[in-house]
Each structure stands twice: as C-alpha cells, then as structure tokens.
Image (cartoon, rainbow over all chains, first blue to last red; front, side, top):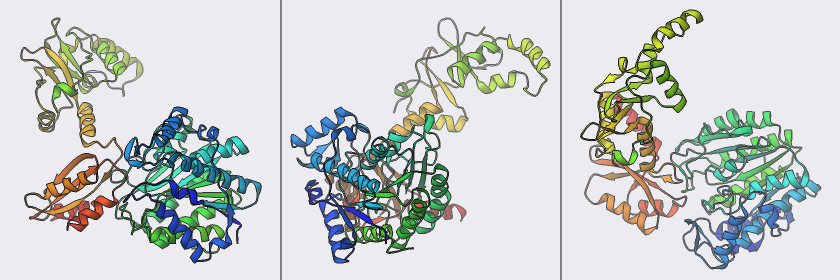
Length: 319
Length: 226
C-alpha cells in the first residue's frame, strides 16, 4: 500500500451556498462519512490544512481580484460576479484554506511524509481565471499548486490532468503560453456544456503551443469514448512531456448519474481513468501525485467515486 | 439585427484607375477579400474580389521570368477592367436575416452597403455575419445547452421560460427545431450558467423529456436517410 495523505477540514463546510445550490457543504460531508464508514479513512495519513499565504495566491491571481473577493465576503454580498458564484461571509477564508490544503499536501509529498495525497477541499478551483470567479470557483487551487511546486521546490515540469466533466478554462488560460506546465483536460463538449471552452483546436499559444491538450466528449458518450481519448490523447501528451510532478483536477460529475452533465461515464469508467493516470504517475513522477477535488454533485455517487479513487491512489484497488 | 449595426465602416476602397497590382497589395496588406471601387464622390462603381484578381493575374505555375513578364503586362491594368460592375448591394436598414438569405441565394461572400443614391456606406462580409450570429447565439459566453422535447401545443415555451426565470438563470439564446416527430418539437435553450441541476430536475418533474442532443442529432440523420 502506498502512503497516501488526505486533506480535509471541517472549516471547508463554512462556505455556504444556500439552499438548492449543487456545490454544497453536504458534498464534503458525504465524502468524509463514506470514508469513515468504509474504514478507508484510518488507512490515510491526515494532513492538516492551513490558510495559504496571500503571496502564493498572487502567484496566479491579480491582487485587485483577491481584494475584491475578500471585500465581497466581508461586506456580506450574496454572490460574486455571477449568480452561479454564491458566497457568504466566510467564503474567502475557506477559499484560502482550500488553497492552503493543496500546498500542505504538496509539502507532505515533497518531504516524503506521504507518497501521494487527495485533497477533499472546497470551493473548487479550475474555472477561476486570473481576475474572475466562474462556475463556483474563486481561487484556482491546482494552478496555484503548480506555481508553488515550481517556485518553492524548483520542480521544472508540472502536468495537470483535469477529468472534471467541465473544461478547466481558468487553468488552461493561466498556463496556455507556458511550456513548463502541461494542461490536459477531458470533458463534455463545449457546445453543450459549461464553460464553452476546451475545443480540440485549443492547443496553447506563444511558447506554450502544444502544452495544452483538450479531449471533448460528446453528450451521451461514456466509457468507450473516454477510453479511446485517454489512450489516444492523454497518454501520448504526458509521455512526451515527461513531467516531474502530476496534479489532478479530480471532478466526478462526468458520471452517468450526475445530472450536471450529459456524459455517461460509469463507476468502472472512473476506475479506468484513475488507473491510467496512476500508471503514468508511477512511470514518470516516481509515484508523486496530488489529486484535488473539483466537481461532482450527485451526493450518492460522489462519495463512492472519491472513495474508489482514493483506494486506487493507495493501491488498495486496481482496475 | 440590422445591417447598419454590423457592417464594416472603416472602409478600404479603390478608385477605378488603381492598378491590379496595387489592388492586390492593398487587399493582402489589409487582410480583406473584397475591395469596393468608388468614384471620386464615393459612389459605388463595382467590387473586386480576391478571386477576380487571381483570375486576372498570371499563373504561379509559370517560370519566374515568364511570370514576371506577364505580371508586368497585366499588373498595370486598372481594376475597373476586372471588377464586377453594378454589383448586388444592400441597404443599411436591411436585416441580417435578409442578408443571410441573399448571400445564400446569390452565393456571394460580401455585399456593399449603399444609401438610396448609391453612395457606399459600408460592407458586410460573411465574417461580419458569423460574428453577429456568434453574438446572437451567445456561444462566446460560458453556458450549458439543454435539449427538451415537447408536444407541439401552445404554451410549452412559456412553461420552460418560467422555470428558467424561477431559477434566476440568464438565457443566452433559444433554438427550436421543428424537424422532430409530427407532433413534437425540440427546444434548445442555451443557459448562461454552470448550475443546471435544479432547472433540469424541474423540467423533468413537470413532464418534459430532456434528451441528449446527440440522440437528436443521430435521429435527424436517420430521418434524412429515409
């Protein structure tokens, strides 16, 4: 079994989004309870989250944007920039803690305390742009993690693999001209699903041409299409990039039972995705990976899928 | 949705005496495919397309000396000799829908826009139309497309719009396809949100059928083959 770290903090529940919002505190509660019930939690090494220092958030986000977000929360605004982005007074503190959870997970992997880690954090991050919140996301947790790896630990090449059903527009835009970060995303086709980016022909710009790769999946397609695109697009992209570290934007909303999307990935399909990624991790990054929760809104499926994913990180389960 | 709102007005034009060679340089330099030709007062005389120029210029298959000799011979001719005289024109008060239909019917890539006296006011190309329709469909904004199959009867759209309004969701656009079963239609609202779970659930609860747009697409394909 691989020594696997786990980031979770009850304070993540304090980002309240009101009744009937899919990105709810219940998501994390359900994950946590499931891990307790199945006994998986006691096999994991707990990593304590701390709020990230603002300088790390500034490594990705515009300082004025950070201040606007803090102010919106302090002033008790109900939403930030768009009705999708419901906030409460505690939201910005929780967002700092979410980023901080990822940074602590990276510290734990880099110090050798754990080999890999899963971060059960919220709010999610991959839609957040340099100066704009989008799709329930405020700070781009994974993007900040990639910059932290490079600036704090001197890691040269970071690959970000994003299997949330929505394209990570924020992450793509942040790194699209940067040849040191590979961004690969598989998601529902942007003509049908939020946020309308991540088309096949988006492949980076400037020096970053070729370091962005997108695999859109048409609605109604499932395991077979994921299998084909993962093998045809993701594996060669990661192989030729040869990353020193892999970060995952782990979204579980592509599942057939998740009403948020039109794709039909099954529970087994998710296992396949996790397995192929872990094969790459073991081959290229000496087993080092930090997986970070993004979406996943079916409260019955999400805990199960996260549980399976964590068991695969631990190598207690294989496809 | 009027031509006047969408036409290009930063016009690049030529006088009738401009040489073919200069016209080509101008069009390549400005990245345009259609060059209106006007008289000194600004009255439209004709239009030159990049295809007109290609037809007039020597073949690139010619050997270099031959090419250059021919070019010298031809390049100095005035554009008035190759332009389309009295081209099809539209007025600024035409709608974009008019223009779309005209372009489709007449197979042209750009239309000069003139006033009643024939003075050139602008030009509207397929590029401008594409931009306008991207804007109308709102597809350059983040959102989610739903596909709802409904019985063909009055009041169905209202029910859908009511639910979308209840959920406080901004509507990007709505497309309607009538090519469904005889008594059914497919409605495609483009919602400017990531948060579609509640709206989907409510639509299902009042009895609408939400289908995967690909299923619709494939069924269309089958109908066409019948």
